[in-house]
Length: 276
Length: 362
Image (cartoon, rainbow over all chains, first blue to last red; front, side):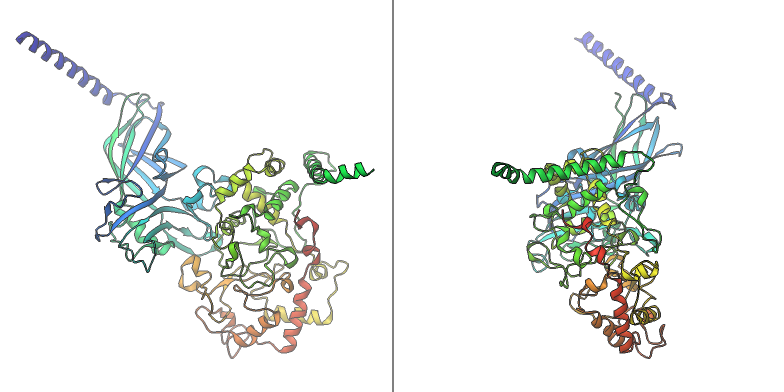
């Protein structure tokens, strides 16, 4: 009995040390400058500390207003990863549309990322002015303005993408404002300024997040950066938004407080550095 | 004989399609020939007295096949939710592609908008589109009426899906773009190709400028041109008769209390400013102003002479002590000048454009 115990103890210690060795070996792995791999970024939308389920009136903002969400879509672009040595890897000309109704859209992949230990991630919420003014032939994939169906992520009357769209219902909304107590908050506005026209409201927001553990890209490690995205921050960020008062936002100037709020809704929860 | 006639009648529709398709194939084949003396396939031609176009033609130069596809789309109700409203509903060639006699446009389910539909002509020279300039690229224009709930009330996504399912369109896309793939950019570029070819530059005025046969102006019209240059060309400048700017021309604020350009820029200095429209074919594009409030050119000139209101952002030209040293807002105009200016404006009517068979519903 005693022998068996020490034996199993020995085995566990051995296994543990082997694991430890393999672990430390992994982080110590020399970075092959020629090796690349992909980095996945997962956007997990939540409302406060609850799972986000469309149509469920389970949520409440700081103003005490109960609400349900029926739509949550946003563009992510201009992603950059910063290495621990300060060098920055940019991913230009890649645009992603995160849709709550499409789980595949919530996991995006950056390809051909050079090996290295990445400590920060930066991205823009929205579509930059250069792409907002680009010829239609260059607007492919999620930038194809005819691709949104009922999601309507494009302002056709004031040419520009809708960067962020949140819609839902709240019993706090006076029926005099909207008989069905629906709210729609659409944020766009890339700053104008085409053909010498005046600069207009710019609601592009850029977020930089540090990662609790570094994303260690190696030839055999394709990290996944798992973001938590708290939709409650849309109402309860630096600006407090009451749905009773603010339930229909469809112009850039009125949307600015919302953009300043959703800038705070992203955080890196954890990073997976699993070996392939 | 009767049998043959019966066969012919029975098959006329098919035959017509075949003839049309054959014509198209010949045209396409024509494009591909490289013989040095072959005519270039360029349905867009810049009139000699016009400046260089603004539209990036190198990115989407109209071809005959592209223009024919665009024309088919332009005249097809398939672009609207219930199939009833085509672009031509509010853009009728006979009236320089405006909605004749409608102050504001009437769309799906008899719903009405808040603005007068603008003429479609010389679009390659436009720097921005609509009365408020909200759209900066001709290729992005068609999405606005398609998705507007009181115009065509359809999603552009659904339009693309309907076109893909239709037997008519894949061959037209193939002729225009080389493959039968139907996608958003191609759809928009084809519509642009048709709209770009809507060039009006053969009015009697143009012929007079270019010293071409038929280019005569009467004394009355020449006096009108002189008065026009003195009193109107500060805004309606150059051969396009617009400087493409946005200005407040002092209309009474009424009806929808439309704030115009400010709707897009959200800037206080743009309230009540609207695009300065071209005056080409102005005789045919009534009613006038962004909300179609004036039914005659005489009413327009009376507004400038007698009724300009000192509202926010009234254009400096029209203010008291403005360009004409006027003692009150507006443009000093005698009744002779008004009559002469109207006579001149009618020389901008381009019958060749208004009846051009290339632009007629196929």
